[in-house]
Image (cartoon, rainbow, N blue to C red; front, side):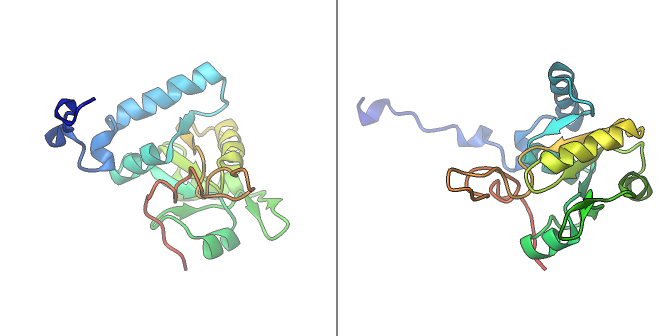
Length: 170
């Protein structure tokens, strides 16, 4: 192929931000709900980190970090996210007050996005919340750190931090 046949991308139509690149909040939520029905999930749905952030940025959802306080402190967390630990302490024992604390901080009627390290604990937390009457609770796929790579390390190919989304460390 010659250089003359290579077309330049249309920069004018390129999205200016993540929020510009994703559909509207209702469309994102409906797509997540549809996938949840297709997959038989026991909660409202699951979202990619970029979609979750777009919803939070638009004021359409609350982000709740369900990792332990220790994880948030040492690994980092999303600024202005709420915190309700699904499991606590170094032994990661299930927090028996999780649903009550989540309701107190977020309320059952809001769109709530749950985030953990990899998306597994937040899925379990979303299931518990849905069973307790939360009808708009979603899991953030890939979590804060992402899945393990071939060398058993996180953050190499997916997750909140890998996507370049906002986070801070204490």
